[in-house]
Length: 225
Image (cartoon, rainbow, N blue to C red; front, side, top):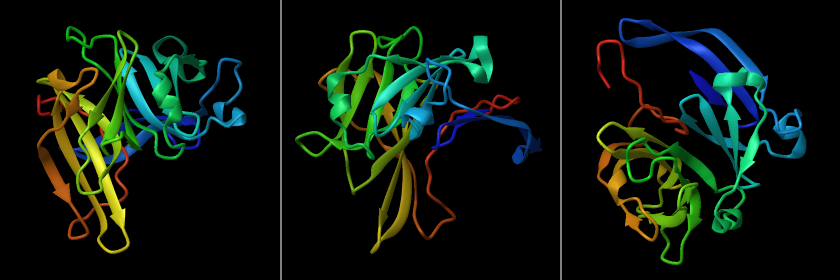
């Protein structure tokens, strides 16, 4: 697996299983995420690294506060890869600095959005109070994800069958912590659209949950998703 920490580091390792249950991490390594000048991103204040998208070994990292996306060729250069900032839609730069890029995923090859990064903000709202989404690369554009029940976005992933899975969380002093995953049809994601989808899972303080911030899709050796 490959992950990013919130303070500008790569974390890579191998997950050990007992039957189908993950029980350990082996061969773990960490390294600072480097900028185009070879210095750690956090040295320039680009440390709130919250989102990660994979495009066949080329990784894109979303950074809150500066509202920027940076490209890394991990397949070629490993964890010493230097980042290259990519152009983002102007509206992304106007997002709240600590409520911006949390969901970032590369659209599947062969689809209408192939070659486009899909991003949804944590709590950057449009004029109707829905969550702002951005298409980065390709033709670009802006869309919105329907916001309900005070949930904010914390990650996303693409699943087979053309689904964008969106991880959301909610916290309040009166209702406590809750999380859910929604399934949004990728075919509905396009410039100007308001998208929504059914809830696949919901859990609150009656369940064993924490501050859910990461989501990935994995197919095991036996074919299970």
